[in-house]
Image (cartoon, rainbow, N blue to C red; front, side, top):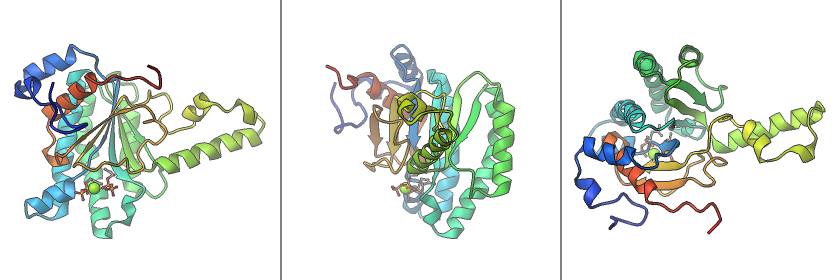
Length: 260
Ligand code: IPE
Ligand code: IPE
Ligand code: MG
């Protein structure tokens, strides 16, 4: 099979398939259990359309909603979406407050659909610093969907991979101090259990839109052996078929985990 670019999305037979056929082909193969997505490019999309950046974020929410449905359709069990990083607070305060209120409204708006699709909603990130009204809404939806058994949707919000590791170190240090564990008992499993993602398998596939070749402080521990797919498509233009093509790209990778 030929490729558009190294690590890019596959071209050829699959690209020419219509969406239902593509979905059928992808579903019949090895589906990644956990897909994590760095949803990037909202601002550039808006600028290209001659619109303010906020218009890109609004469009990005619509994409996220469609991609949750598509992930469910393909049989993905865990989907993690990077919505707001610990570094995104450094943006102009008007953009930050707009993102907060957009998120607040979107959670309310998406709630019935999440319930209808049996989606379990979780948030990873530091609760501190998040406006109380946003936290209240998040907590309500997390509680209401806790018993759902379909796709688990993790929203990385006020999330930083380094923050997460710092918090895990603190939790483990407290346990050592309290005498519940000894330092030499700390192993990979204990560290993993101290992360925000406890109980969630590591991502098999990490997708980044908008062409940037970096991980931007996302899931630093968990992506140790994730397959990476970077697409030049800007997030508001990312469609279910792009997700299926990224999964198809994953399916042709040879995962070795350091072996042969
Ligand atoms: C991603 O789009 C959304 C967030 C980080 C909240 P950006 O806002 O980063 O868009 P670009 O990268 O400036 O195009
Ligand atoms: C990563 O995108 C964070 C999210 C998608 C929420 P950024 O746009 O913040 O990342 P950089 O600044 O390009 O690394
Ligand atoms: Mg960006």
